[in-house]
Image 1 (tube, rainbow, N blue to C red):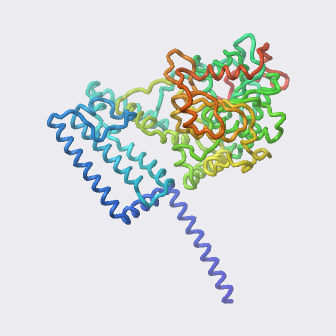
Image 2 (image 1 turned 180 degrees about the horizontal axis):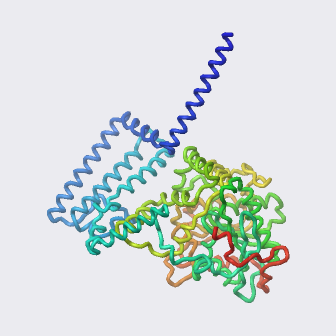
Image 3 (image 1 turned 90 degrees about the vertical axis):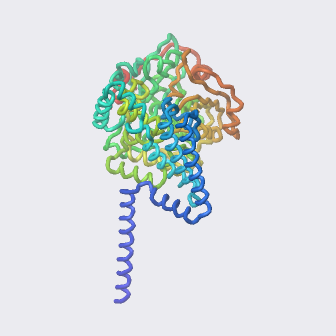
Length: 578
């Protein structure tokens, strides 16, 4: 009897321990989902255990305060401006001359910069933190410090005060109207969306929907030349936002440019999943998405092989497809050669987004997806905007609300606001297996649609494009694929970022440049870049020439559809409006 009581007591204690751990986890998810309290407590304790280092840091702070006071006094006595804590040259918050010319506002600016830099420096120097903890806590600390910038408040923003005086308060009244509108829509406006309509002045390249399933529509574009290259092009677009980033307004459309160069172009237009699609997997996107689009292009384009392009997550999918197809039947791979635009395959250094990718962060995302069946596009967009808060959040807060300005109408930003949802199963797999565990580069570590994935089996020629300022797919991380694949690689590095580096049509007014050259195994990205010549303008013509050499002779355009894949409607289709 005593043994039974002891066993029951042990089970009860074990159950209580599990309940306590569950409650503790739930409370942490509710009040500190990113685990910052523990990190900051650890940092504080490490400083208290390092009194010599702490005394040195406080001495530096006292010296900085004294230096600022002396400089401010000198300014009020007529000394010229000489920032002791100058802003970063790329920091546009203090670009107006008033922040330099008026000693009062110069002091406000420099005091803010001094404080924020000292606080961040203290965090980075905390002796007890790991590098991962430093990066995570520094990211969230920057969010707070950026939010507290004097430029964000009317009382400490002389430019907004001057604007209010010049307009007799009209700017503030308009700012309140802008704020009310943004509160209604649930986000800070980045652009004036009124001038844009998909199918009206965006996504205008003529074409037909020739296939539709629950995942995607395949659009086949009408030829713009008397003859076309025999091998079709299949563009695997990202399903984060809509496909028409590749078919923006005339003159900016990659699709328009390609058909104008004599290519037979197909594109994926992904469905926007809802709660009923929570079970959609990465296997589905591979088989019913990329593979299906390629089969449609083979059939309608009357070609045994195609050229395939993948952009962003569409490029990650295409790389998986290439490994999958080369494993399934190396002699009959439907893709003869391929292009990747700003696509990650090695996620070991994914850039700033890694602050969201740990067990704490993924638990937060999992909780959202469990309730909804998907990750809402607005939630994902907010995360990306936090990676560049001053330019993508606070810049618009100041201009919209304090200055009373209407955001400029920009087609790229309109597209950026046209957000989509991520189905729970697919997105959970993507974040954990790629970002967290980086299994895509581990040969045969992943199995998709029945085939082990090994990027080293890919032998087809590859044209890669990355962007110098890309914070979503850092170019040195995309370059790592050069070390994996066995086919020849031509690598292109464009100036600008994840979007504008790709939406880069040839134009005499282009402000962008690029580096381009063959890249080989064992070559470090810095070494590759040092060996290249910087060329002004667009990389599109060089890519089109590379495609023309490989996509076969010019032939009469095939029909827009066939018996198997009949016309279902005109471009831009129906899924783009969901």
